Image (cartoon, rainbow, N blue to C red):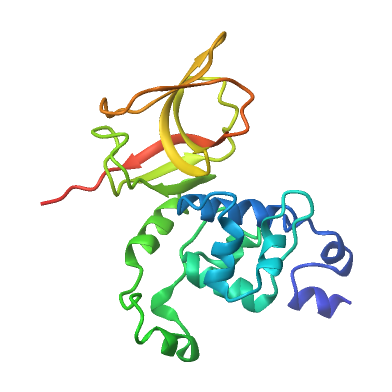
Length: 230
């Protein structure tokens, strides 16, 4: 028994009881990846089926709201490739989302990318992931639209705290609104709910009554790195 303790970090008792957030944690993290791509709830099963080659009935279990299921190992590997995310984060083993290392693919896997668009190393995701690993519990969202210009520009790396989801204080939040991941100024109004406001004055503000089925607070924005183009 003493020899066993020297070669593995966990005892038999600990290994059998260790808390790993697989269910429903995997479903929640998978939904985060889908929301980043603006894949709505009704579109998610068909999208997952398309990118993994699995049957619609199979992939529907992965995002089922009542009894979520886990993918088989091959499907998990494919999901990691398709979303560009490390398996440890999807499985709930690590606190930080890190990028999939496309430039370190095994030869048998890399051979399938010969005629695909993914020819260049995913250096920007790796850079963001490396930075995120030093920022405690924060996660990263890449800003694509001009909703928050000039405060947050398209392509900016936006770091947000997934623990801070109460939404009872004014601030800038990452939100899942109508199935899409957006960033908004959130102003708390005791009588009128929440006011969602863009920095870009071209877009109108929206009043949301709470609770609302169409709105989920993903986390509070803590830091943004705006790209500088020359």
